[in-house]
Length: 217
Image (tube, rainbow, N blue to C red; front, side, top):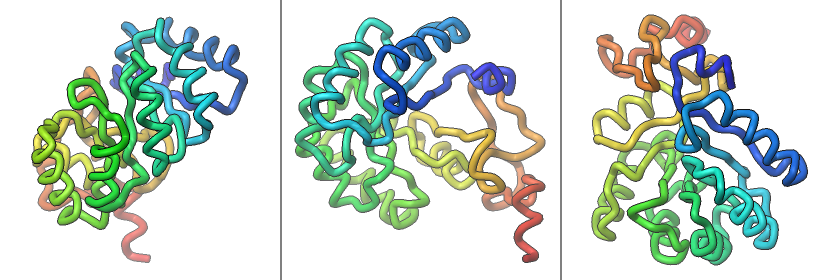
């Protein structure tokens, strides 16, 4: 986490559920000593919990006022998600494993998500491309969801352009993973949790040395 903060990020995320609850709480408390406050730390369960464990974590996370509690259960278990949303005082984030407008609409209809609190993580590169993502945004507008509640999963140049171009609430980043695709232009540093778009045409692939080197192959 310190290495991410040293790169210019101000909000970080850790995985939970791979250790006992008490150990996870210790890990959370350790990271909270590094960031400004709970709003700058998110946690991600990667869909691993059943309802009992998802609720147990929801109650335990409440005192920390975290940025969000991500994918507590199976991404298509809308009943579980609704129960956790109802019980949790921490914002819920989910949607990265929903790829169509129809699945995304079912989350909005049946998943208990709160449009003034929770976050939607539909991934524009995985959601059958930009065309389907635009259909999803149109659907969200019909349910009075702001685009600012959308923070796409997918920390790469394509998602960054989409987040900026469509006026979304942000974009996740993965500085040390998913190479050579993850991350942004080599010559544009992250500063205070923000990064600007490159001036190159298109996505800006040529400004990422590790990525452009795989294209001749």
